[in-house]
Amino acid sequence: MKLKNNKRRGLALFFTICTIGVVCLIVFAMMHFMRGEVHLSENYVDGTVALLLAESGVEESIFTIKSQMTSRDNVIYNLITTQDSGDIDVDLTRLSNGETKVEPLVKGGEVKAKITWQLNTATTQELADKGVPRDLAREGTLTINSMGTYNKTKKQVEVKKKIKAILLKGGLNSNSIGMIAPGHGFYLNKATRDSFKIDTFDFWDPWEFIVKGGKTYMKDGVVVDVPKWLMLTTPMKNELEHPWLDMGMGWTGWTGGANFTETNIEYSDDPVTREYYKWQGVLTYPWWEKSSSELYNSNTKKVEEYQEKEVNAYPASVYKAIANRVVDPEEDPTSGKYFKDVTFVEAFERNQVTYNKVLPLYGWGDWRNVSNKYNKYFGNPNKAHDTSHAVEINGVTYVKGDVFLEGWVKGQGLLVVEGNVYIGGDVLTLQDDQGKDSCLGVIALRSETDTSDDEPRTGKIIYEPHHDSDWSRFGLTTPFRNLSPRLEGSFHAQGGMELKTDSSMKKLCNMDIVGNLSVDRFDRRKMPNDVRITYYDWQSVLEKSSYDYTVDKTVTYSTVYDLAMTKDILSWREVPASL
Image (tube, rainbow, N blue to C red; front, side, top):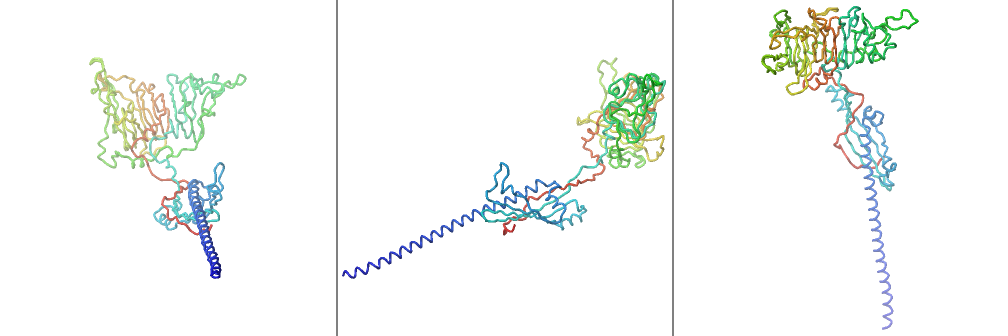
């Protein structure tokens, strides 16, 4: 019995060893499985980081494109705007290496990106077939390939987006009608050479011409006589070498001439010079010599000749085409009924003034509609106190024929007359019915049949003063009422401006213009005695009007493209790493 028990003890050892082996095998298998799971987890993390790096490379590439879309020095801009296809590498080192005070996106990571451009020739041809210039718009596909690497794990993303390159619009040309020479207080092309000459013995009331503000342009220039009083005033005094010793022109040398010290003078051909007797010194004989070669002052400069569109000047046909009101008896005989003779009679019927066959635009009211402010015996209301009959001009009113203008005016518009404009007195602006500032532009153009060079018959603004026996309650008109009219607006006359009267008080007729005066022909000797132009920018008021004054709407384009990517993504996918 004891021998049997000893043999069984050896079998138990075998089973023990087998059990231990099986346990070791299970443990080893579990360890191998766990190590595999760890490696898989690490690869997943590395792949995710690499994918995120690749996607960040796409966003960085898009940011790089957008931040340099209008820089012609940039390679991306040149690729899209000048080539049909191509590719470039994008610098993304700031993502992987970081910058000053900015840590890298992921330490140990790397990002590469390449941009590929392909022009869509079919779309370009389609735009060209519609009449769009080939260089105006370019459309194509932009492909961004971005690869991120992290711990030797690479992931690459490909994104396609549509992109358009369109030439930026430039400003519109100077193609809107309006105030003639809006930046000038006084603008003329041709003037008679003695326009600003002081007559030797004209000491009663020499003619004086003053421009305040804005610019003064004289294409052919002119010689301006300088009176002594102007030499002794600032700033002309600072322009002369011997203001106290130099002598002015004329018999007394103290009145007349022209004062351009408060405006900037421009000329294109001949210069604008001053004429006076310049002191030569005690040891020189004669002591004074006439000088007429010096520029008028230091604010006198030569400029390029202005083109008509630059100063808003256009032919009659342009104004007629854009006008919202046209009065043309030749085209529409029924409109001839608006032209009539207008007669004003002086008190006691001593004298009368008649404007023949004119379109009357009379803006004064009726003194009968004005309440007496004092008493029925001494109060004397007049027509100017009633503003209910103001002439309303909005937009462009085109008239072929002569026009008579006087009184209150409201609205924002231009009165274009192919003929003559007769002004009988003050032309004053009122606020319109909406309480906005009013502005008036008067443009007198020569008729097609008027081809005379020296003495034009039309295109004139003619000031012809008159009395009015029905001006006020008492039927009396002060003799000085119309001697010095105030004209508020912009006035342009191809044939020039002149004074027409046989009155013995002609020398007392002066004129005050608040706005500007523009003429193609200027003869100072035919104008009122003293003329003062105070520049005012009526164009800024005119531009607030709702009326469209655009002549043509030609759009210009710059040489710079505007690059724009569509928000929609054509495709976004992960592709095999190839960069």
